[in-house]
Image (cartoon, rainbow, N blue to C red; front, side, top):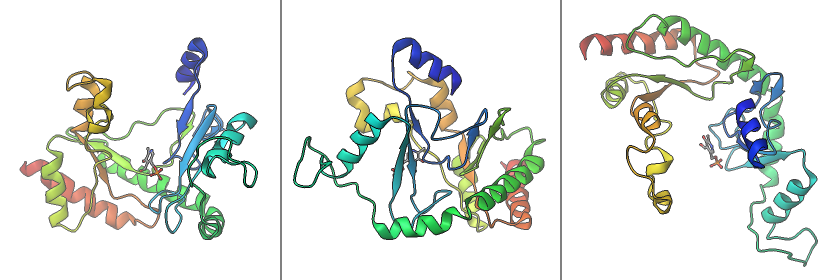
Length: 230
Ligand SMILES: Cc1ncc(COP(=O)(O)O)c(C=O)c1O
């Protein structure tokens, strides 16, 4: 983040963190959500801190941004009956807030378990030549919403593991610049060669706090079997 923040300062830009998967993550002693001008967290049920339905939050230290966000989430209104701008209805249900408040108490414990699981994966996968495991950057706390490795033939690997009762995911399958929604920006295949290469190799292995060492070992054994037969 530091180089990004430096660059933003140089060009007088705002930095908005995508902290959707980063609850509790840290960078050089600071929590995610507190690194840029504002940050967006997701409370989608599958996230490290998930509601029982859709939810999210914006964090910021700027009063101007806080007022702006508050207005937009409530039909552009900061005072009943008065609508200063066109806005949206992005109000989170009170029920979701109650659930999140309860679950928040367990977040640190769940994060520790995710980190433990990632360490087990790291130790079992680190010496396998055909796999690239997630890199850890010094002075950061990675909270492992996902455990993403890089392999060749990820589609065949996914099918192979699926047949053995192991679910995996692609996060994500296509890069942003090739999504139809962004065709107006004029990018084409080949414009971001590293992104495009990595995108075809990434696969997310099972990762959640309750995952056991035995289950991780089962995933890794099957992964090794795939690599030896493919
Ligand atoms: C990195 C990242 N950013 C943003 C989002 C969007 O989250 P939401 O749909 O809850 O706004 C997600 C959701 O999966 C995500 O993983």
